[in-house]
Image 1 (tube, rainbow, N blue to C red):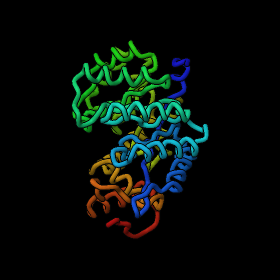
Image 2: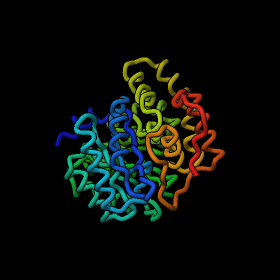
Image 3: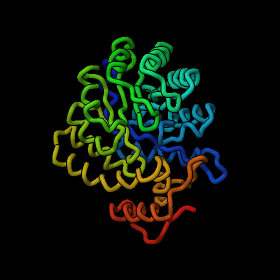
Image 4: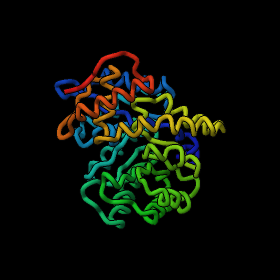
Length: 309
């Protein structure tokens, strides 16, 4: 497998699509496929599923595989596909990553295991074993705010050197110094994606490959346009979009992701904003703020309240 050629392809705005549920809690397959189609029609360059925004810890292994398969079918080769296959369980991570390879995903995104808090050597062994079990490209997902452990640059460098199929990282890391050192140590061709909304534009400036932004669930066109503007050399437009999206970025993270994004998509009539416990709906006050932000940004034009109970 030519990983260098793959690296040239996997760039842009990758939407981490939410997992919609029906009122009875089952996966809403029709709504999900509609969301994927809307993303592609709106200009998203890639699709990811069963990452943080997809509530993977609330899904069974069978359901995660089902969502991956549904996404692959709906995408139908139109954009690249990088499902989240990581888990706090090592064997499950291998099983899901092998499944992603089996169905023909372009890459697999593997999260730093959450809750367990492994040390750096254990992280290295976990990721190396996963990478060695497949040929599919692997994107590390480093999200210390959720996993309670940060993959250090030295660990990432070892993995990039020892595993040819570990080709990049989604950094949901607010430490911009750390992010700079990733490219310095892992190589300027290592694919660096922002998972922090306010760092999507700054990461492009240091050589990032794009972003995997939850905000794209609600405003895919402008999020994709930010990357397109940067790529075409229209830096003024990219910067304008960076600041234009900031109010939406801010409000979507005033409660745990994806609770607010689901509330917004419910207001937009894209889904039923159902969550699986232990997650719960945002407060009525926050939902009102979300609604007002959507109207102000002209994402919603109709009048009236749309508050989930």
